Length: 199
Length: 109
Image 1 (cartoon, rainbow over the protein chains, first blue to last red):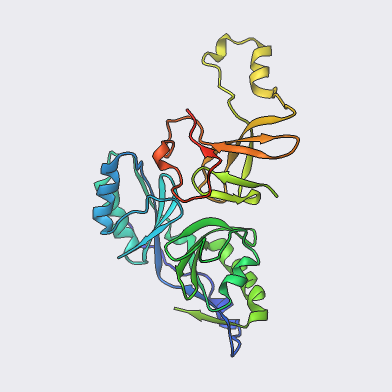
Image 2 (image 1 turned 90 degrees about the vertical axis):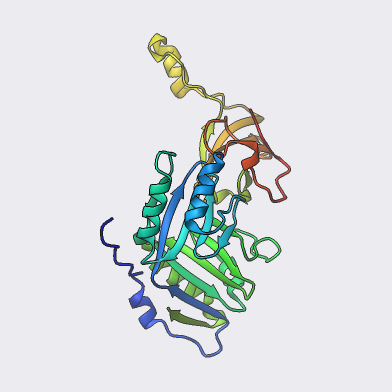
Protein backbone atom coordinates (compact mmCIF):
# COMPACT_ATOMS: atom_id res chain seq x y z
CA UNK A 1 0.00 0.00 0.00
CA UNK A 2 1.09 3.56 -0.60
CA UNK A 3 1.82 6.12 2.08
CA UNK A 4 -1.17 6.88 4.31
CA UNK A 5 -3.00 9.99 3.22
CA UNK A 6 -2.66 13.01 5.48
CA UNK A 7 -5.53 12.81 7.95
CA UNK A 8 -6.14 16.48 8.47
CA UNK A 9 -9.74 17.10 9.32
CA UNK A 10 -9.79 20.53 7.70
CA UNK A 11 -11.52 22.17 10.67
CA UNK A 12 -8.44 23.96 11.99
CA UNK A 13 -9.78 27.38 11.03
CA UNK A 14 -13.17 26.73 12.61
CA UNK A 15 -11.77 25.53 15.93
CA UNK A 16 -9.13 28.27 16.00
CA UNK A 17 -11.80 30.97 15.93
CA UNK A 18 -14.69 29.30 17.80
CA UNK A 19 -15.18 31.00 21.16
CA UNK A 20 -16.05 28.86 24.16
CA UNK A 21 -18.57 30.02 26.74
CA UNK A 22 -17.65 29.69 30.44
CA UNK A 23 -20.65 27.67 31.66
CA UNK A 24 -20.96 25.50 28.58
CA UNK A 25 -23.58 22.80 28.58
CA UNK A 26 -22.51 21.44 25.20
CA UNK A 27 -19.04 20.40 24.15
CA UNK A 28 -18.20 20.22 20.45
CA UNK A 29 -14.95 18.55 19.54
CA UNK A 30 -13.16 17.00 16.62
CA UNK A 31 -11.34 13.71 17.00
CA UNK A 32 -8.03 13.96 15.21
CA UNK A 33 -6.03 11.14 13.69
CA UNK A 34 -8.90 8.78 13.02
CA UNK A 35 -8.79 6.24 10.21
CA UNK A 36 -11.82 4.61 8.59
CA UNK A 37 -12.37 1.45 6.61
CA UNK A 38 -15.52 0.62 4.73
CA UNK A 39 -16.06 -3.13 4.89
CA UNK A 40 -18.55 -4.93 2.68
CA UNK A 41 -19.00 -8.66 2.96
CA UNK A 42 -21.81 -11.19 2.81
CA UNK A 43 -22.68 -12.08 6.43
CA UNK A 44 -24.80 -15.02 5.28
CA UNK A 45 -21.49 -16.81 4.87
CA UNK A 46 -20.53 -17.08 8.52
CA UNK A 47 -16.95 -17.86 7.58
CA UNK A 48 -16.61 -14.31 6.20
CA UNK A 49 -17.67 -12.81 9.50
CA UNK A 50 -15.44 -15.11 11.53
CA UNK A 51 -12.43 -14.36 9.33
CA UNK A 52 -12.95 -10.61 9.61
CA UNK A 53 -13.48 -10.83 13.36
CA UNK A 54 -10.18 -12.66 13.80
CA UNK A 55 -8.29 -9.85 12.09
CA UNK A 56 -10.28 -7.11 13.85
CA UNK A 57 -9.85 -8.82 17.21
CA UNK A 58 -13.46 -8.12 18.11
CA UNK A 59 -17.02 -9.02 17.19
CA UNK A 60 -18.72 -7.45 14.21
CA UNK A 61 -22.17 -5.98 14.96
CA UNK A 62 -24.73 -8.09 13.11
CA UNK A 63 -27.73 -6.39 14.70
CA UNK A 64 -28.92 -3.36 12.75
CA UNK A 65 -27.90 0.07 14.05
CA UNK A 66 -25.41 -1.09 16.65
CA UNK A 67 -21.65 -0.89 16.99
CA UNK A 68 -19.02 -2.83 18.86
CA UNK A 69 -16.07 -1.37 20.74
CA UNK A 70 -12.72 -2.98 21.25
CA UNK A 71 -9.40 -2.27 19.64
CA UNK A 72 -11.49 -0.49 17.00
CA UNK A 73 -15.05 0.69 16.69
CA UNK A 74 -17.08 -1.29 14.18
CA UNK A 75 -20.32 0.37 13.12
CA UNK A 76 -23.19 -1.36 11.33
CA UNK A 77 -24.03 0.62 8.17
CA UNK A 78 -26.22 -1.87 6.34
CA UNK A 79 -26.96 -5.58 6.20
CA UNK A 80 -23.71 -6.17 4.31
CA UNK A 81 -21.76 -3.02 5.14
CA UNK A 82 -19.72 -1.83 8.13
CA UNK A 83 -17.49 1.10 9.02
CA UNK A 84 -14.36 0.43 11.06
CA UNK A 85 -13.00 3.38 13.02
CA UNK A 86 -9.39 3.01 14.03
CA UNK A 87 -6.24 5.05 14.50
CA UNK A 88 -5.18 7.04 11.45
CA UNK A 89 -1.93 5.13 11.21
CA UNK A 90 -3.59 1.73 11.45
CA UNK A 91 -6.20 1.99 8.71
CA UNK A 92 -3.90 1.07 5.82
CA UNK A 93 -2.37 -1.91 7.64
CA UNK A 94 -5.69 -3.21 8.90
CA UNK A 95 -7.25 -2.74 5.47
CA UNK A 96 -4.43 -4.69 3.88
CA UNK A 97 -4.81 -7.55 6.34
CA UNK A 98 -8.58 -7.72 5.87
CA UNK A 99 -8.21 -7.63 2.09
CA UNK A 100 -5.68 -10.45 2.26
CA UNK A 101 -7.69 -12.82 4.47
CA UNK A 102 -10.96 -12.14 2.68
CA UNK A 103 -9.55 -12.50 -0.82
CA UNK A 104 -11.85 -14.49 -3.08
CA UNK A 105 -14.88 -14.14 -0.78
CA UNK A 106 -16.39 -11.23 -2.67
CA UNK A 107 -15.66 -8.84 0.19
CA UNK A 108 -14.61 -5.26 -0.50
CA UNK A 109 -12.41 -3.31 1.92
CA UNK A 110 -11.87 0.36 1.22
CA UNK A 111 -9.83 2.90 3.13
CA UNK A 112 -12.14 5.91 3.37
CA UNK A 113 -10.08 7.80 5.97
CA UNK A 114 -9.58 10.79 3.73
CA UNK A 115 -13.31 11.33 3.33
CA UNK A 116 -14.50 11.19 6.93
CA UNK A 117 -14.32 13.44 9.95
CA UNK A 118 -15.21 12.31 13.47
CA UNK A 119 -16.82 14.82 15.81
CA UNK A 120 -17.78 14.53 19.43
CA UNK A 121 -20.83 16.20 20.93
CA UNK A 122 -21.14 15.89 24.69
CA UNK A 123 -22.55 17.63 27.69
CA UNK A 124 -25.83 17.99 29.52
CA UNK A 125 -27.65 19.61 26.58
CA UNK A 126 -26.02 17.64 23.77
CA UNK A 127 -29.18 15.68 23.07
CA UNK A 128 -31.32 18.82 22.91
CA UNK A 129 -28.95 20.39 20.40
CA UNK A 130 -28.89 17.30 18.18
CA UNK A 131 -32.66 17.03 18.34
CA UNK A 132 -32.92 20.46 16.69
CA UNK A 133 -31.83 18.95 13.39
CA UNK A 134 -32.41 15.23 13.66
CA UNK A 135 -35.61 13.25 13.22
CA UNK A 136 -34.47 10.28 15.31
CA UNK A 137 -35.80 9.75 18.81
CA UNK A 138 -32.60 10.34 20.75
CA UNK A 139 -33.99 9.46 24.16
CA UNK A 140 -31.60 6.96 25.83
CA UNK A 141 -34.46 4.48 25.94
CA UNK A 142 -34.44 4.41 22.13
CA UNK A 143 -30.89 5.45 21.31
CA UNK A 144 -28.44 4.55 24.05
CA UNK A 145 -24.76 3.58 24.22
CA UNK A 146 -23.95 0.85 21.73
CA UNK A 147 -26.39 2.12 19.15
CA UNK A 148 -25.64 4.03 15.99
CA UNK A 149 -27.61 5.19 13.00
CA UNK A 150 -26.91 6.61 9.63
CA UNK A 151 -29.36 9.46 9.49
CA UNK A 152 -29.71 13.11 8.67
CA UNK A 153 -28.71 16.03 10.85
CA UNK A 154 -29.47 19.51 9.56
CA UNK A 155 -29.78 18.06 6.05
CA UNK A 156 -26.34 16.43 6.19
CA UNK A 157 -26.14 12.66 5.97
CA UNK A 158 -23.94 11.23 8.68
CA UNK A 159 -23.38 8.40 11.11
CA UNK A 160 -24.56 9.24 14.61
CA UNK A 161 -23.53 7.01 17.50
CA UNK A 162 -24.38 7.19 21.19
CA UNK A 163 -20.91 6.90 22.72
CA UNK A 164 -21.79 6.90 26.41
CA UNK A 165 -24.55 7.88 28.78
CA UNK A 166 -22.83 11.16 29.82
CA UNK A 167 -24.38 11.81 27.27
CA UNK A 168 -21.82 11.94 24.53
CA UNK A 169 -22.30 11.29 20.85
CA UNK A 170 -19.92 10.55 18.02
CA UNK A 171 -20.68 11.93 14.58
CA UNK A 172 -18.87 10.62 11.53
CA UNK A 173 -19.56 12.83 8.57
CA UNK A 174 -18.17 13.36 5.10
CA UNK A 175 -15.38 15.91 5.37
CA UNK A 176 -16.98 18.23 2.84
CA UNK A 177 -19.92 18.54 5.24
CA UNK A 178 -17.81 18.85 8.39
CA UNK A 179 -17.24 22.60 8.36
CA UNK A 180 -20.90 23.30 7.63
CA UNK A 181 -22.00 20.86 10.31
CA UNK A 182 -19.68 22.36 12.95
CA UNK A 183 -21.03 25.83 12.19
CA UNK A 184 -24.59 24.54 12.40
CA UNK A 185 -23.84 22.80 15.70
CA UNK A 186 -22.16 25.90 17.10
CA UNK A 187 -25.18 27.97 16.14
CA UNK A 188 -27.64 25.44 17.55
CA UNK A 189 -25.63 25.16 20.77
CA UNK A 190 -25.28 28.90 21.33
CA UNK A 191 -28.31 29.25 23.65
CA UNK A 192 -26.95 26.41 25.76
CA UNK A 193 -23.38 27.64 25.93
CA UNK A 194 -20.79 25.75 23.93
CA UNK A 195 -17.14 24.94 24.35
CA UNK A 196 -14.87 23.68 21.60
CA UNK A 197 -11.98 21.27 21.70
CA UNK A 198 -9.65 19.47 19.34
CA UNK A 199 -7.81 16.33 20.26
CA UNK B 1 -44.37 13.64 6.95
CA UNK B 2 -44.58 9.90 6.41
CA UNK B 3 -43.07 7.54 8.93
CA UNK B 4 -41.64 4.73 6.83
CA UNK B 5 -40.46 1.47 8.35
CA UNK B 6 -37.21 0.34 6.79
CA UNK B 7 -37.05 -3.48 7.03
CA UNK B 8 -33.54 -3.14 8.46
CA UNK B 9 -33.48 0.12 10.41
CA UNK B 10 -37.04 0.37 11.68
CA UNK B 11 -39.26 3.46 11.51
CA UNK B 12 -37.58 6.55 10.12
CA UNK B 13 -38.71 9.92 8.81
CA UNK B 14 -39.65 10.25 5.16
CA UNK B 15 -36.75 12.67 4.56
CA UNK B 16 -34.30 9.79 4.91
CA UNK B 17 -35.82 7.98 1.94
CA UNK B 18 -35.93 8.28 -1.79
CA UNK B 19 -38.93 7.15 -3.80
CA UNK B 20 -38.35 4.57 -6.51
CA UNK B 21 -41.72 4.18 -8.20
CA UNK B 22 -43.92 1.16 -8.67
CA UNK B 23 -42.62 -2.19 -7.43
CA UNK B 24 -42.84 -5.61 -9.08
CA UNK B 25 -41.91 -4.44 -12.58
CA UNK B 26 -39.99 -7.36 -14.05
CA UNK B 27 -37.57 -6.73 -16.84
CA UNK B 28 -38.65 -8.78 -19.90
CA UNK B 29 -36.55 -11.91 -20.20
CA UNK B 30 -36.17 -11.53 -23.97
CA UNK B 31 -36.28 -7.79 -24.81
CA UNK B 32 -35.50 -8.43 -28.50
CA UNK B 33 -38.77 -10.31 -28.91
CA UNK B 34 -40.87 -7.38 -27.71
CA UNK B 35 -42.84 -5.06 -29.94
CA UNK B 36 -42.31 -1.33 -29.54
CA UNK B 37 -45.63 -1.10 -27.73
CA UNK B 38 -44.68 -3.82 -25.25
CA UNK B 39 -41.28 -2.23 -24.66
CA UNK B 40 -42.88 1.17 -24.11
CA UNK B 41 -45.33 -0.43 -21.71
CA UNK B 42 -42.44 -1.91 -19.72
CA UNK B 43 -40.45 1.33 -19.74
CA UNK B 44 -43.05 4.04 -19.30
CA UNK B 45 -46.51 2.86 -18.34
CA UNK B 46 -47.42 2.51 -14.68
CA UNK B 47 -50.60 1.48 -12.92
CA UNK B 48 -51.07 4.68 -10.90
CA UNK B 49 -53.83 3.04 -8.86
CA UNK B 50 -56.19 4.77 -6.50
CA UNK B 51 -55.83 2.82 -3.28
CA UNK B 52 -53.20 0.26 -2.27
CA UNK B 53 -49.96 0.67 -4.17
CA UNK B 54 -46.82 -1.45 -4.00
CA UNK B 55 -43.83 0.79 -4.46
CA UNK B 56 -40.06 0.86 -4.05
CA UNK B 57 -38.20 3.05 -1.61
CA UNK B 58 -34.50 3.46 -0.95
CA UNK B 59 -33.26 4.28 2.55
CA UNK B 60 -30.76 6.62 0.97
CA UNK B 61 -29.74 8.52 4.12
CA UNK B 62 -29.65 5.33 6.18
CA UNK B 63 -28.65 1.81 5.26
CA UNK B 64 -28.94 2.60 1.52
CA UNK B 65 -31.01 -0.51 0.81
CA UNK B 66 -34.00 -0.81 -1.52
CA UNK B 67 -37.18 -2.25 -0.11
CA UNK B 68 -40.89 -2.30 -0.82
CA UNK B 69 -43.75 -0.42 0.78
CA UNK B 70 -47.47 -0.97 0.41
CA UNK B 71 -49.05 2.46 0.65
CA UNK B 72 -52.59 3.65 0.08
CA UNK B 73 -52.40 6.47 -2.47
CA UNK B 74 -55.58 8.06 -1.10
CA UNK B 75 -54.95 8.04 2.63
CA UNK B 76 -51.14 7.73 2.42
CA UNK B 77 -51.47 5.05 5.09
CA UNK B 78 -48.65 2.54 4.92
CA UNK B 79 -49.92 -1.00 5.40
CA UNK B 80 -46.52 -2.66 5.56
CA UNK B 81 -43.00 -2.62 4.25
CA UNK B 82 -41.23 -5.64 2.89
CA UNK B 83 -37.88 -6.75 1.56
CA UNK B 84 -37.55 -7.13 -2.18
CA UNK B 85 -36.84 -10.53 -3.65
CA UNK B 86 -33.94 -12.63 -2.42
CA UNK B 87 -30.52 -12.70 -4.02
CA UNK B 88 -28.77 -9.78 -2.41
CA UNK B 89 -27.04 -9.93 0.96
CA UNK B 90 -29.39 -9.08 3.74
CA UNK B 91 -32.46 -10.34 1.95
CA UNK B 92 -32.74 -13.31 4.29
CA UNK B 93 -35.28 -13.26 7.07
CA UNK B 94 -32.59 -13.52 9.72
CA UNK B 95 -31.05 -10.25 8.57
CA UNK B 96 -34.12 -8.31 9.58
CA UNK B 97 -34.17 -5.85 12.46
CA UNK B 98 -34.09 -7.52 15.81
CA UNK B 99 -35.37 -4.58 17.79
CA UNK B 100 -39.04 -4.06 18.45
CA UNK B 101 -41.42 -1.74 16.71
CA UNK B 102 -41.54 -3.30 13.26
CA UNK B 103 -44.77 -5.20 13.54
CA UNK B 104 -45.80 -4.07 10.08
CA UNK B 105 -42.60 -5.33 8.48
CA UNK B 106 -42.69 -8.77 7.01
CA UNK B 107 -40.56 -10.92 4.86
CA UNK B 108 -41.73 -11.50 1.34
CA UNK B 109 -40.79 -14.22 -1.12
